[in-house]
Length: 222
Image (tube, rainbow, N blue to C red; front, side, top):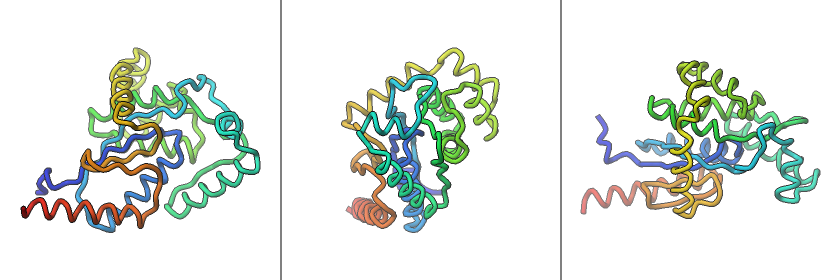
């Protein structure tokens, strides 16, 4: 059995509306497997757009309003992300009418799923639901359906959202990470010591992991 202390602790602060969070995670996952690193991942909440209305917003319009992105720039950016996704075995469906949604309820379900050791599975299911299948992650019925699809209790998921059971806990965790200086995502923290922001590429993550493994090895023999 692996000594838990030898595992690399990875805190991944992200939002399921963030395509670079998905890309960054997949790059990291490939690097972890290639380097044979024993690890445990913990996902943490971050809202890119906490004031996003319930009905959501067209992604291209959102990018234009938030960043001043022109239609040409937007198309180029989305094409780039689509290509990155294909390289990592993921399908982005950025076709006409792709929408952004409010994710506070999704973060509450992820908190709930963590208590059942299924947070990671739900996170991946939400990424696919949003980016590949274009499902509305602000819709409570849709969220409950997604949790059921990975084997979690549909009625309990709906109840969690109906009574906003974990709203305070999610807000508290969001505030914790903001106080640590996290202002953008993905933010990947290794062993609560080293921060990497953004989707930096498989080779970069391999380099970081090599460095961390060296430090752990030296520490175990000091």
